Length: 72
Image (cartoon, rainbow, N blue to C red; front, side, top):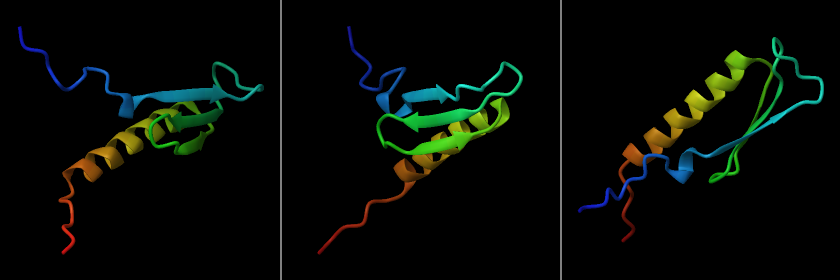
């Protein structure tokens, strides 16, 4: 049996969603935090929350695709 080295749920995609005390089902508001990078983003709606996650995933994908510079 061979184990897959890439987790189906990698920790770089782990988030904490904190909702404001005045958030409502039709008016989500709060903060999203990536647990690996520590980056925090405020959101004022469900759409903004989803956009923040999508943007963060896109930025992480770009960082992995960039070639590493070699010093020397």
